[in-house]
Image (cartoon, rainbow, N blue to C red):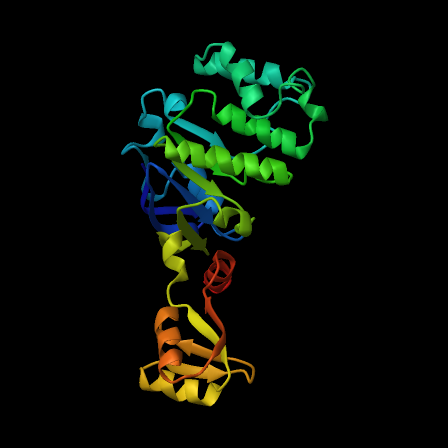
Length: 290
């Protein structure tokens, strides 16, 4: 479990984050979203003990990172890609990190294959593409096979194949009971991956909810042979109806109810679409207007 409680960080009298409270649960992938400067990375740094909170608590399995027993075996993190020395090979980088973490060297070969870098393992990381460096960073976070992953923008630089690989990796970790907290600007991709969403703006949490709940409140778009008759019938059923001249916009009815009502009044329906907000629309409405 990842948990923040009224987490606050102040720099020179200015709040970078204020009263941030949310949880990321085991068995789920939690997306942590915010514009640049929203406090997202600051929060992640406090979770990993890289910044000290001014107030509140940043906890992993009920403890501060520095109080965890063997934290490298409990938490894997990717905060920045490119932390390897450009003169080191990918293999040497992982072997060094494995030594520090007390992990057998055979784990290095396993991870190079797992992240698709077997052929590039002996090349210097300075020659790696951005996507390759991201894969190496993820491999570093997975060295100890930790139950908790904290990933800040791990998808930057990945091609479509790399995105599919990362998505499968995260879902696999969650399915095995792991806890995954991930930030990304690629909202369309994130929408295919996460179970829960936390949106932060101007240092404050604006939303913390399951992704599935964000579709609530959608309206229907209806096009039929006799829109006036449909309009009156839907209003009699308690719906709110507007039109753009081409189709009716109906709020307050399910698609099933709207179809049944059209059948009852004998009006053929040519189109009946449930319109729901996607993650990007929800994010922009909250993050852009803190």
